[in-house]
Image: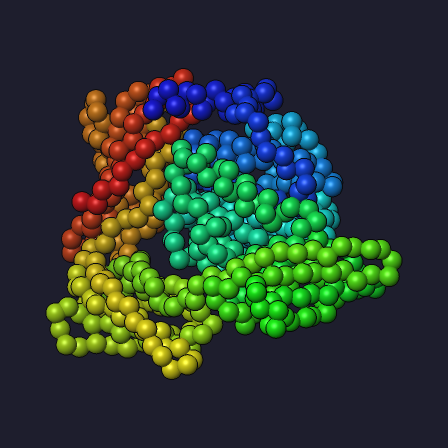
Length: 502
């Protein structure tokens, strides 16, 4: 591990200094690509300096084979922090060398993880001429996250996708699978990646190929493929005044099923619906213009197998008197969801009705330290039903803290921060046990969720535990052990940590 950190630090310093990094070998040509590629980079305090440096390496590896310029690929970076900021506009760097130096010089902003605000800001910049974005090229968003956000992302992300942006998500943390799979473009298995920050190179080639499929110039292609629909995207060759597109599509081998549409010349994408599942469609798009001749563009798209819901039921955010139930997928064919829950063992049960467009609900007014059986039933518009069950456990009355994080704060010191525990907390007990030297203990009021711990010299180890204090009993402790790297490795500092609830 020590050798890996030193080598990663060496590469990062060479990139930051603008020196050449070793090439991994011949790279595939991507000069036939044109698009605006925006990286949404988690630059908040929830990301360690080591993780941030590894993500910068990953971004450059992803971009390395591309050709940059006003007729090729343009890229930009927006930081997720308390307030979103743009590192550089799309048209700032028109060469690989300049872009590599700009990425190497990118600095972490720290602050809160306000991803929703950053997404709204990204939507503005992706379609802004002032930011160097172009109106007639594919738009791609690559969101790199540790899986944690302090504000809502669902609405601003949907607005981006509604405007034709293809969304890829790379999560280097645990994250909420349902939330992230709903946020990514469909199908999520091609647009959502969960990977440890040290294993990012594993997905680089696959993610790059998927991005190229979207931004390949002069190419008709499909995105957001489902069992009954897909979206066609093509380069904008016409305008509303210069002609129209003739679109034909049919199931492969079934000419009698051909459908023909006339599409406005001002459009560059179209959603096709009411398609058959697991069917390959032949698509032909012909630009009709009195000014220029354009050959027909063709593609072949296979719809996904027919989906049913629910196929997954998850329990999260469990407290003494509540928990959250979520399910996937959410389908237009479902009219309503019924959530039946009751304690085990027992004969009593309660029923909640949830609109078919929602993928979860909060179950409240529960008994603490109790196991519940939860059954989610999808009631389809056709009248048929499908059910799936899961067990859920409420916590004891005395809850525990969450998201304990340790960050290097200077020579010989650490900063411990955590999310508030549930219930009427009287305060927190913070204990730091060092490998050498005496243990220390702090007591802080309930509104304080961060403390500075000293006396942890470079090369030593420390174990920090945070425990909420309640009136009747102490809550559960959350502990984390942090190996301290030598001072010469400060730039490549990274801790591997293990949570343990006691």
